[in-house]
Length: 278
Length: 309
View 1: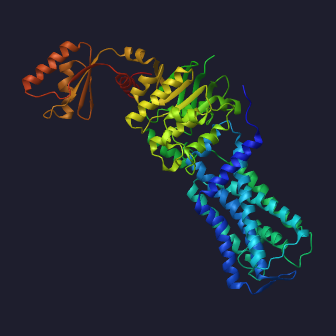
View 2: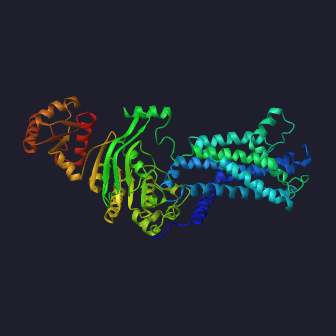
View 3: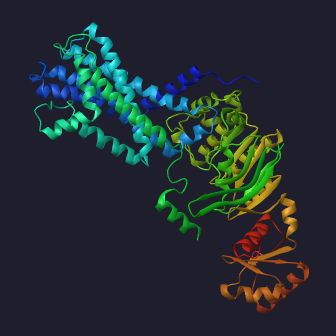
């Protein structure tokens, strides 16, 4: 008897399949890749001539927005994307179908995550290209290793957090609402849309607590002229990674392949089941 | 070795017991139908055998292993057609068959799968554009793409039009002829009668009867006389009127009167005599051998009213 197909081709096939899926859902493409680019153009048109002063130096608004929105794109492609798609596939019963095949379950989930990282990479490159061509963004080769590592730590952690949210929500419709309810307010307090260093203390504290600001700032630093190479911000990366580990633990503990409601669980559904049998 | 061996299987969710001491086995190469009403525990039992759920207690062995802890090897040897589970709507039939087929050691070629399930014309159509019956055929296609030794079919033809149903039956029969073991759940009695080598009747999570369709039918002797209730007879009076007349218990479904009798010649004589005297026509009058449906109704009526157990 022939052996199983080897893991790498399976993972490539799964990644390709998730990328094709993404590409065939126009709404996902628009919100993940299109909207951040539109925001970049709009923010620059509105506020692009100014500068922001930070504790370390002056940064032009154009550089601020490009770096921050690039980080935001990476988060949309991983956290928001996974928190939307995974519960959708679970509701549809697609996850359960895959679990019944000989494909190792981790390969299926890895396909989801690797494809999300690739989408994030494409989004970030698009953003940085537009920033360089139009908005005066400076790319310094000496800071690129830091940019790549910061990107990888960020997408890894936000992918884990996306899987955690996917594991915690019951249905796809609540997942989509929850992902946006989390990420949009978080973006406002995390130096993505506006600079918050002069904001009220509680907003600063909120931003400092969640991982997005740490990710956005450390990624912005890789493109900020006054930050000297190599620009590794180990403390921020470590903090983001800590959240990533937390996300991973929750995802591993709570992940289910079954659509909710397919088996009676929890008090309310149990009562319904009792009613149905009597 | 049996393909499936189930001993004293129990599954409860909180206070609800879905499967309550189920025992049965399926021989290799056999087509076995679990028959039961909605909520009888069919799907729960099958999902335990597939490895999708764990049993509360009892022993389960499928293809020689415990499905709850079985791995990739096991899932390569089985095919699953769940009662309701989606397929990626953004993909074409060709794409999903190739994608899922690519995970098995020895998948069937695309053309063979397409021909078996009869989706030739839809091979490049997106799943999202297919009708319910066509999607169900995609389910079947994904169930057989890995050349399973054992195929689980959970209500495979629910929602099919009659011709699609016949086609699926032909497919299941041909798989059975090729030596594939099939565990089928259904609430269509004609489906079980047509396809199954053996039938297990499930009620309230327990097996209440088992045997070949002929054996089960043989358990209930008699002949069924049926006709439409004449207009002037009230539904409530049907039992009294025809029970005595025909000498059997009256089963009333809508306006259809069915009575199982031991001596059909005399019974037909009496009821037609009554009709002629009353000047009414007994519409749709028929006399037939008992069917699996009569057996099933007799068994489940008895079970739910507590006469057996």
